[in-house]
Length: 350
Length: 282
Ligand SMILES: Nc1ncnc2c1ncn2[C@@H]1O[C@H](COP(=O)(O)OP(=O)(O)OP(=O)(O)O)[C@@H](O)[C@H]1O
Ligand SMILES: [Mg+2]
Image 1 (cartoon, protein in one colour):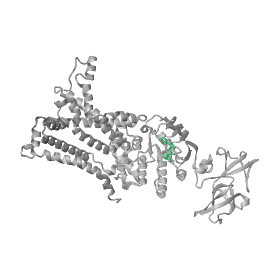
Image 2 (cartoon, each protein chain N blue to C red; image 1 turned 180 degrees about the vertical axis):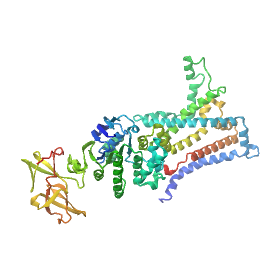
Image 3 (cartoon, rainbow over the protein chains, first blue to last red; image 1 turned 30 degrees about the vertical axis):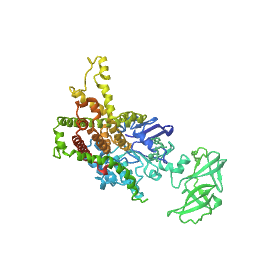
Image 4 (cartoon, protein in one colour; image 1 turned 120 degrees about the horizontal axis):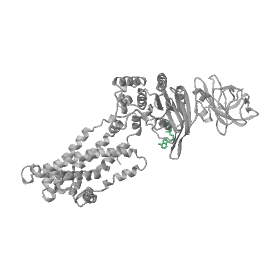
């Protein structure tokens, strides 16, 4: 059993609050992605779990054991560093073998684990080379192999695939997921790439300025964001938010009308692909500014009530810049947000 | 200005300066050492040097000092440098205090330790008043070679460890902290981390520090002279004596050339022994 419990972790650098009472529970064998924009505290949180950074408050539990004051080595985890930290004075083989050697593993096991990790990350051709001769992406894979070779119960990864080209990243992502699933490794995976988080994670913890604003399955985070920030950060194109007025339980704008929670000013949130296109008077009046054919669909960018909106239309559609069309969001899939707090309002189940 | 000539013009003053005030006297010294000293034999000065009573003693003393002082200083500088890495607040202050002796000339340093250690010195009186000594005890004369040697080592360590320390600290600062952190994550205990990660990455700095320190250690003189006078002959001291007291510039030049050859040899030894493969650097 090696689940992780992060309990109200605080971190201040001088006077700046980097982490604000962050709590997160990762079940044994679960894969959680920490997703958030640059500077939101992902690396800091990961380093506190690892024991490399001091914390200003809170506790870290691994496998039901309070490890808050243990040295990194005694926490029973492996880590991939954001800047790799591959040892320059050791060959790739010795780098990958490092964790096994410190545990005095028998030579045969060292060899077996190193070869397996190297094969998985396609670094066998470089095993006898020194890291100085490798590209950034190759070094990054050495760092991942070094962490996998020790067969950790808990694995922390800080943007481990960020330097790979798109194709290799896709392949590595699939391989990584398979291997970690087979081994039942509890994984915390830092990324600011939301497709990576969506594809890999059992759950996504979305971070924003030192807090976890939502932690849920990828589909829930995508379809029912807890805040306008999550809706805007997760998904491509980001979720659209349009101000709308709710009177007597019905929100109305242009030719669109739907049952809505709360009263007064609201934000209507909808995904670009969850819409039907209709005549301008039978939906939200959308002024098209750009139409970009993407192959499988056409991406339309424009405005509704002066707000920037992006919607996905079928390939056959014929619209030109400057035209107006009607947008009808699927009422089953819309979300309602408070314009003051940016937080989601409870759905009305009808 | 022609881009190809400019760099040469810029280094020219330094080259001229070194040529006039270093290379020329060096060549003159070498020539002087081979002038035969009136014996008609080109090696006359050298045979006079080697057959002098003090030659063997001074050679042995100098090597003994180097062999004790330099490793001691390296070990201490490494220990101090590693401790400094752990200090977060006031690191500059500690480093500053540790390097104060650098600002003291070697003769002054010798005199400081003489004031502390001679038989009427502070340490003698303090121990006497504490009842640990029966009276003023001499430590620095020819009858007490062990304490004299220890006093010289002490003075040299006090005076010149900071040179090594500064090179080591500069080297430690170029090692990204993530290397040590990764080693810790993967289970390396502090000693293993030090020997497997820190030391190998520090090798170029250790090499520079050792070359610098060894060359200077072979030139040890003023501190020795202050503490022991001629009770503890060293090579540079002999050169000084031949030059000033015996007024024999030829033998003094022979000593100078010998010291230079030893220093060059020591440098070569460190260059070879601590060679780093450029591929293995970050
Ligand atoms: N050692 C430090 N001293 C002071 N401030 C720090 C330190 N480390 C991080 N910070 C600050 O803490 C905040 C969070 O940093 P962190 O490195 O955790 O961000 P991140 O989410 O990993 O970003 P990125 O995606 O760019 O790696 C940032 O505002 C950063 O400036
Ligand atoms: Mg980061």
